Image 1 (tube, one colour):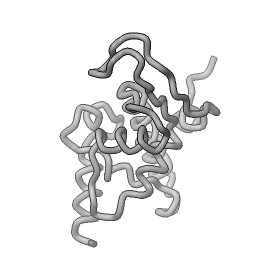
Image 2 (tube, helix red, strand yellow):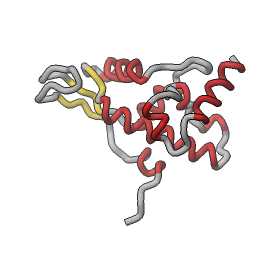
Image 3 (cartoon, helix red, strand yellow):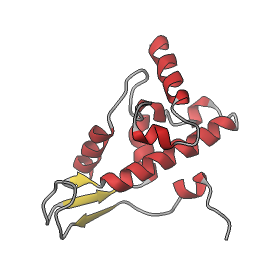
Amino acid sequence: MAKKTWEDKFNNGKEPQIKTIEKAFWGMDAGSRMLIPTPKMIQDYIYHCEKGNFSEVQTMRNDLAIEAGADFTCPMTSGIFLRIVCEYHYEKWQLNAEAKDICPFWRMVDPKSDLAKKLSFGSEFIAEMRQKETLEK
């Protein structure tokens, strides 16, 4: 079977879910309602970050949970899906897609973060795009 592309992973066809956790997880008590987001939800959140402003992943998770009526957003899946958004849109960038079609993921990912170190293209691109937006603001 062929390896899935970042686009395949982004367009996974799954819907967001809210699950009640049975055991304490990530500092949340058993019985808490956990949002399992989708890559598209994360992309849509990032599109609402203003140019030149940078948001924290924790803020995104809190905002998504509130919007969905959950107690918290799963940190594991939101991190995985944020990476998928980054890799997918970087690939589009490499293919010279129009700027309006590129999600500005650098507004969400700190170039010094663990996630930035895992990305196939490294943290330099993120730092460069942040610097560019700061100068243009």
